[in-house]
Length: 529
Picture 1: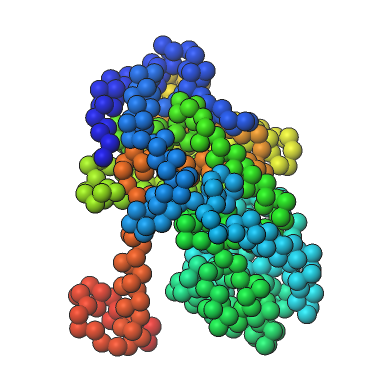
Picture 2: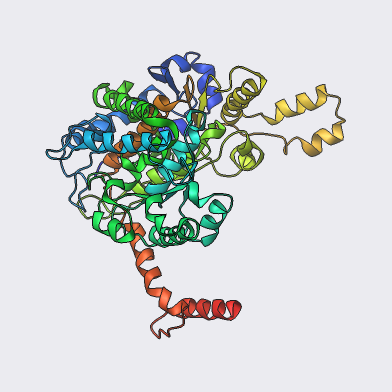
């Protein structure tokens, strides 16, 4: 496990100063603490670091073997240790070599050809071309394509795309209520074709289709799965089943056939541009020196926040409404990957690992939880994301959006002292009694760190780069923490127990249940009688 104690003296030194003081002392912080790749700029000058701390962080990354681990992963080494699997999602976008015998290019061509057939009406229903597509999946089979489809809505010129993930029947019911089954294609996304929530929703969707098109329901369905026999039993012809490989983890699978609903929406050309963007970030990650490597920079800043400064959460705030699902996507990517307490060798970890990731789009976030960010008792670092150009063109809306983004970074970093509050109130004519009563309430402590990522505009290529940027950041942090970022055993126990509890909720007695669970089941039965 990597020794992070070298960061301690730097953290102790920097706790004794403020971002105000650092900026007053170092007028060139923006030039020194920014990094670029193509049109993307990462400004981390408002992080509570200096040159010595940053040098120590890169030394930690080298000591942890980040470069060696990266190369091992790319070469096909079974980096997913507990499942004995390679980790090669980069191979789906040209960023790593494809394992022998796996026809990545052919599979991509095949599902993109199907997407074009649906878009152009060559694969259609009796009632005509499909107008709507419902993707049924959960976890990585839902969050990735749902996030990307929303982000790239301006690029959609194909059927409308909808997503159903929750086993709560309300999700499917609300999705289909205004759709015509005769003009709807349902995609079932499950690698094994056995995921409980997905298959339950798929069966209900099939019944809905049968109610509208009868025995033609199978014609209205496709699948993304490696279980061709299971899909055939379900009524989906093998020509409409698209697979992927065990070296593609669920939360890294948007680049595979899991992206089929996105491809139907934006077309093969747009989807290939999305892959190209990720491939460009892959090349940057593989070749750029650590000090200029955007994923590595974000990763070591995260180590600084989590381990050196002891801040356990991160707010991710995109100033782009179409990125409204991006915080949830990164939440899964980061927390499912690095929320681990066991090191790769099997021993308990000796440091804190993955932070809690949460967030919403600005400016909405400003009017909900930013109160706590500015004046709460905990320091919450923030990642801002903003586009210089709006897809809608220049105008007062985008100017106001960007002004708010920059203002929040300013306010968090520098705050407003009580003396400044008193002077401002006095200048506005406030009476002395009000100044005494309100000054402390209006004071902002500042000294709250943030990093801002700016790019030209959001399109498929840029989105591919941003997603890959966060993927690689998570990998680097997992390497430094010496954990397996590619398994997810933490999701298994609850799933297993849920299956075991269904008979009890259906009426079977189970004397082995704990008192709380038994009592809750009894209460639920009484309320539902």
